[in-house]
Image 1 (cartoon, helix red, strand yellow):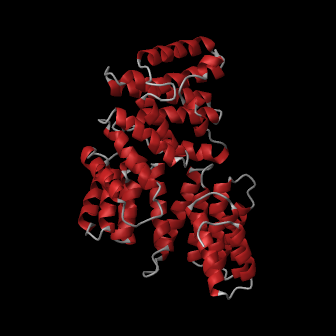
Image 2: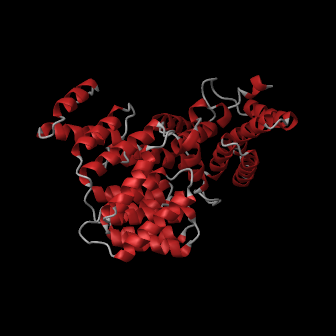
Image 3: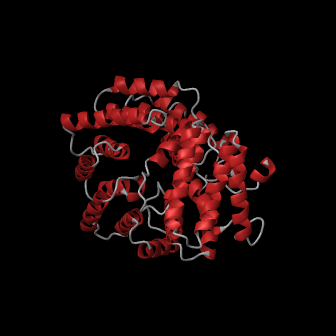
Length: 432
């Protein structure tokens, strides 16, 4: 039976979506923060993926609940149309595996037979090709839980070529392309801009796409302030959740209006949904920006206390996924003259034994800047930039540390310049 299960395309057989440790917990939080809005076209895949994550975390009962919710959502959304069967393949495959792991091989066999019937009813053109619905769901999972954006885009592009009418797939393809440019605020390539414009026209209810389109109009030099305010009203009228663009509109306000106005929008969202964890997370991020990047207008003690309190609350709400928020709190402390508290947080994070390499890289980069700009400890700052750069994961934080090291070397005033030169040479970077 297990040999047959291994042939089923689903989360349990996709080795490239396996997560471990902290990544599982952060993945769970992210999926939960989408909410249960039936207007979200990806709610079925959200519940499917969440079920798998719950299983990997050892919560079989919660896994079953999420997978049964996925079945319900897919059936409600399909309403008997031709896409319902293919969209149930991953869900039934997950249920077959979960029942098998729980020792109920009777139910496992039932779901396995259902999947095999669906796969014979909707055959693939070739053994190496997934059904479009299955490919799109795998792509979405990769986008949400991994950094394998290129693979996700290839899967989505193939699915779209076979079913060009699925606007949510086109929007997700554009979102994946934009995600790869997270730290690049330059203008879009013409091809990506065209895809973004088409997604906006074909998927007008997707506020995230609308907000990103407005952002890149701003990059082109257009005035976007009035439209940003209109979009904020639309965001606030929707159910709270990752997919409805609250964080994106706050970023837009930060870039094109002002941080105090962004804080006002965040507070309005909190008044509307005072107990929503994700809304609190977005509001805490907004206060973090206000307290660390807005140097022209010193914050009042009320704003400082509000930012600290919200960030501490969010840390408690995400107990297994608060790594970034703890660094944010350290930076807030450092920027509001509480260096001892900032140092204590960094000491705690640096002492953690089970950080994965990507998190270590992020931490070392942040701490290097803290040492340089808040502690004036240039020597140790260089050491931590080196620690970040030597982790062989391509990221903004690695590139930022390499850039910092090059600047220090070019100035020639640091005693570690010979070590920096040798270190950069040994990295075998493509750039000179």
